[in-house]
Length: 112
Length: 113
Image 1 (cartoon, each protein chain N blue to C red):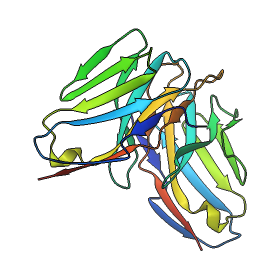
Image 2: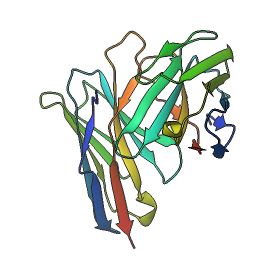
Image 3: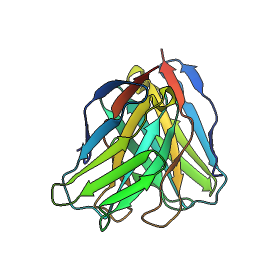
Image 4: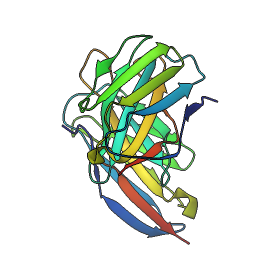
């Protein structure tokens, strides 16, 4: 079953606007990761936030984690056309091998 | 930079053929993974390997097998390809540490006719 679920499924904005994507998960985690996938390509890791962190920044990316609500958000500020991609959250599985479970993703379209 | 390569970007095979998808990573990572990605279903884990000659089933192993004879190479095998295995296949690798990220290859888009 899916651990992380992104919301919205799709988001369309203009260049320069901010984009916010949310991820909800079901069980306790020790970290949460966000990945980006350009059309027809592999996933690229963006940022990892640990369970004892509430907020983390990387360039124009801001990630928050609320463990009490079991949710995370990814904010992309001052978006660019090149940010057009699908964004996935990923959480560790509760197994001995620590594999990841990925959500179904949010498809972001940034128009010039 | 970590590099994960996959043998083909696009592949067209016929039903019943045996298909090999190869993945190679150059960072001496212990863990390697095979996923398939389908619209509306996201990424689903097929198999993973945490060491040479070791393998574990993921969520959807039926119809697939894997081979890891060398640390850098992880192969996904479709013993007898079927049309429902038409998909995007993604390979990933990761160091042993629990909280490390996964590094993905560019993907292989497989069409089974």
